[in-house]
Length: 325
Length: 297
Image (cartoon, rainbow over all chains, first blue to last red; front, side, top):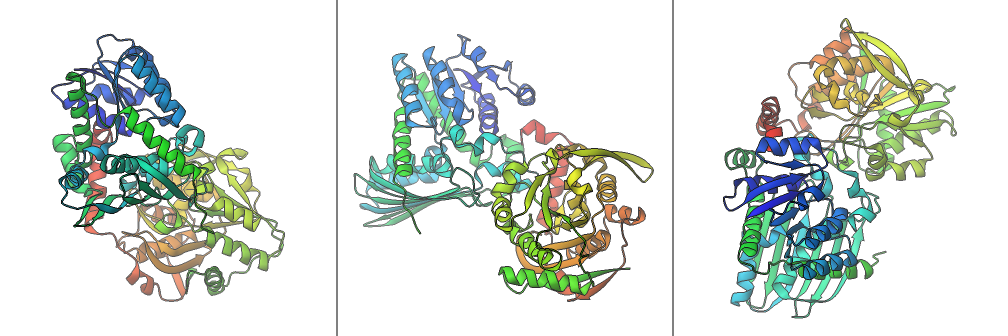
């Protein structure tokens, strides 16, 4: 399959490595505004580098594109790609708000384009194992679900090496991100729990602002699912230590899935040896699945519609805020 | 020989920090001159890491010092808290994220981004080499300049404390370009900026992991402070930039400790572990070999 990659930021570079390593994929072109990033892509083996994504979309030989741009550019880029019938893997969140997400989906539907959204937790083995446990009935009826997705958020770039990279300033502007930690990290959990339990009946949130920004850096949500379970979701950008954890409490058994930061030395060695870390391998599975869906004309999951429902839930959570004075 | 005062913060309460600052100043027999009108305070803001990481000066520490200065000098003395943009940090966001905007509003002081300040070109020689910098107007016009550094390990200079903190007074944002001659540049900037007093916020220190050390260290001499800091952090040899600063007349490597024995803090400082040293070495190696760029790190 012939792919184009748009955006060479942190996640874009992970996709780049995988596109170049995957035998079933031919990376036709990459695009980014940064010359430095394009040079890096060239050194890695990208054949064609472009400064404008519009040029990449015009290439008729490209079947599908990966969009790894800042959130505020997702809608315009995804709509342009859908308009000319490209299949799309777009990074989460799908868009800044429900309106933009609906526009992308509607454009994709009109042009018969597939839209898949990059929720990497959906391809992480421990969290997939929980889904199997729920479906096998081994847990009984899940009554309470608890999740935490805590890390440094936009402040993590290279911080672990003591040589932080600049945080792109769009991260600090609500009109460009659509929201803070709830949008950035909460969408993963909401999508995962919707995958586990189905639709959300109601959701409320408490938002925290430790860093005094216009966007929240921490959020606690409580959600009730139509199928019965009640979930507590904690997300935050405030910690240098990262953890993604889900606990399910069923009428028969309990189950836990957890993903913590990898050992730095082992991760670096693995990156040198295989060009992919344990963390990055979920992105590889995600890409392999997307390629499979496109090749065999299957509807991908998580789809654009799934991500729209996630954004609707997040929008409701922002609306239904709890005050803890 | 310079006096270095070592005092202990007894609790995390604001009055306890203020008490320890006063104690440390008493130990070095420091008295604020009464005719001071403009004060500059330079905390250490590092990236967007807040004070709990031990990497940045606690805004509560700055507020406590402001209280002390106002009580001892004049209640309406002008105080500016200064920092400059850096390769990976913008003051506009750091002041907000790290709680300095709230502190400045509460204490009625100015926050100055030196990168946006008016400045004049100055030239200074270190070790026979000449360096040119922009001297910010806010620093130039201050009657009293107070340096509030942290004690932490650093890849290039091994330790960062009083001398290294003044590196952040250089208004030029892309400071990464100086890393080739970092020792000389640090010394040159200390000669240009000429700070009068140094009070180390060692309440929470970073070390190998963040730890509540409860230290406040004060001195008029930044070189003496750095020698003491290096000893507390467990460095066996004095880092080159400290020796160079002493040679250039910035201060003295010999000091007389006053107050609590430095060994008390040395025992408790979270020393660098072998794994940290390996990681630093590995990082330097990947940089030198260009691997970081090849891997997109």
